Length: 308
Image (cartoon, rainbow, N blue to C red; front, side, top):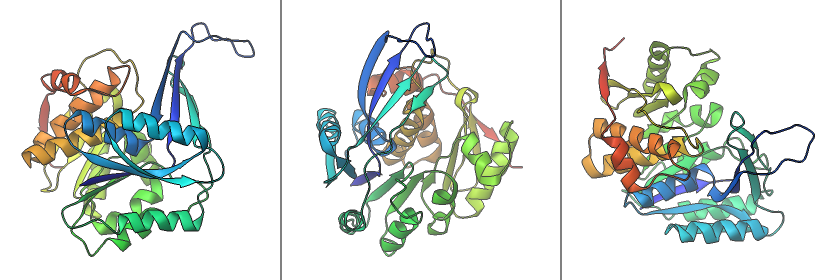
């Protein structure tokens, strides 16, 4: 079984506002409400691609109940831990104003609730996959990712980590199956500004050398790069299409890679599926369907990069 963990799920309220005026009453041109959070997004796209997973995380209040309902409507198995106080957050995303977002804080996660999550994860068995995605609430320890991987380190579980900074760096010693920073996050890790594909390759290789088996770096409109488990490096240009919604495209790339690898056991095929799924979600008003991924898949071109 695949398990995804979203530590701070949300309801994403995605709107467009024509002729936005600061300090004035503005009205939406379109509205869309989705269950949000990187792990949840990954579970939904996996389901769309025919791969079952269980979504774990914390929810609170009426917004938490709505998150659970909407996740179920997507056909995803949810096993969320209920928080008695506070509310799951609502994130407002204004999609036509330079990707403007206002993200809520979410409920406080107490130590006993954190331990409930740990006990759920203790039930995993050899052959399972765990996807840890996104930031953690300020009420939780900065070592949460590391603590989880230490608890399950005696099991043969493939680990996927889609996080930034120390959350990511601290788990490389556990040799995660896949990590997926974008090029901005990659630059933040090494305190540099990355402007070229060559620089992406250089720093992705450093993360690979530190323990990550497969490193994918998404570069938005410039495509993506992978340093695969065997050390081979490939790059993909971004497929052509109309950008409609960038929310969840990175999470879709993770789902596509995982689905592609489970089906083919081939890293290059998995990378192609990842690029296709990420792009298909960017070209859609919602997270990509299987048909949309298959359509974009035909447009993905992969090139081998000479090892630098």
